[in-house]
Image 1 (cartoon, rainbow, N blue to C red):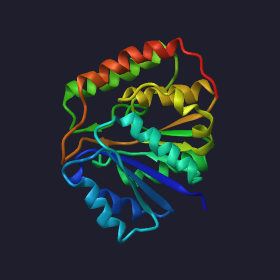
Image 2: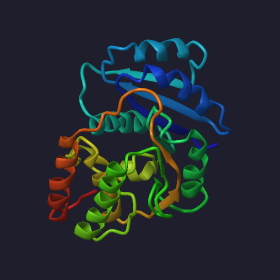
Image 3: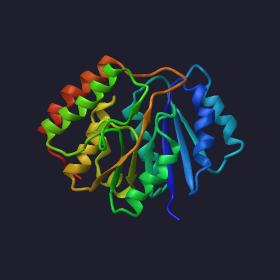
Image 4: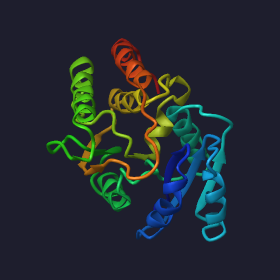
Length: 239
């Protein structure tokens, strides 16, 4: 059976982490979880350690000192996953905005559908977002329109953080050359995979705004993504 690792970056997710982990482990398939916690003062890491008593062989924790950014958390997780020889590696939020029940659909798009990278897409089949302010929806939707226009890549949800990578994608991308650290990281990874010739599939999902905890979005994150996309347009990519 293929080995599957779900990477969940956390900062102050005490309200959600104790629920999302059992929800993933309740799925059919051999899913493992790696939580990368950026020094949450609310006890998120302690909650994960308690759960490790029940899931010792499937639940793993990396603790980092301070908020180092979403992109660096995933890059650390990717390197960890490659060292442990996982076949499929997932990105996922802790707050249930990504439904754990959709993980098998992303996996199937790669393992059965032939994709190298599968994106849980909010915008490939209309707009599938629940409980977001209209301004946030417009900003997110047109961010992807901007990316398609500037980079010329047909990905409808380029900022999506719900993703399944086949191992060979992460082995091929030079992770040391990934430069964006906020949500622009999501754009950079997808575009790099595209430029290196990998097949990307979008799987329609419904994104539900978090019910508990606090969003980590900021205006600086969007600023990095805006200027970073322009720089991506002129970058040369290597394996």
